Length: 241
Ligand SMILES: Nc1ncnc2c1ncn2[C@@H]1O[C@H](COP(=O)(O)OP(=O)(O)OP(=O)(O)O)[C@@H](O)[C@H]1O
Ligand SMILES: [Mg+2]
Image 1 (spheres, rainbow, N blue to C red):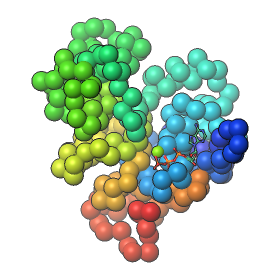
Image 2: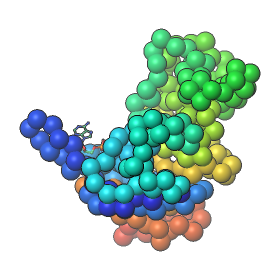
Image 3: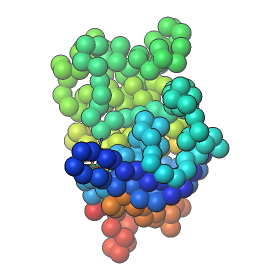
Image 4: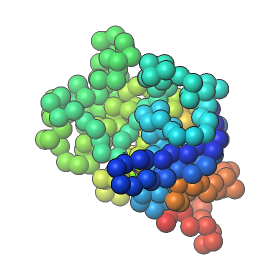
């Protein structure tokens, strides 16, 4: 589904040049659930943003379902993103003036989904994340964890084939974090491919495949691809940096 080959990303600001990804190569099969760990600043968000076609890369090749992303126009990339990809951002990215219902609705409108179908999906997803009774609330009337859950509902409502989640449990207590993980596991079983960045070693271990980003480079623990979830990772493999 996703094939990255020697992707490099360099951020050039006035004074500094940051090499955020270096020769980053990764193959992801349809239906996988991958946890990404690594130190702060190592390039995890950069990788997700490139995977989600939100950012260009400097060098290398990225194929999404055999389409060479580097050759697409901005519009073509946006279309592909709308069709296939759901995003849960590290900082929620909720629109402050819209209530929860409307926030979840935004990407559905982009996709031209009819109003009755939008309503069904929005109610269903708000229910899934436990916020059905707050549909009329504004984001600022919610706690951080609740806002996180709205961001998750918004991504789920698009019924994406490919879900990219940047610290989806970062603002949640451990009970809520496990519930969110269960939600993600459900939608993975329903067929979505998931890449989730997390600092939570326990959650990472539940994912069938773990990769680690260190200094813009990838360490792939595909070794553990078939291990049952819940098995303790051997001490010589540091899942959490
Ligand atoms: N827009 C930008 N302009 C310049 N440098 C950037 C930009 N975005 C990210 N960087 C730099 O690229 C590197 C990788 O950042 P990235 O956000 O991918 O890290 P991360 O692994 O997601 O970290 P965290 O765990 O703290 O979220 C960092 O050194 C960061 O400062
Ligand atoms: Mg990040």
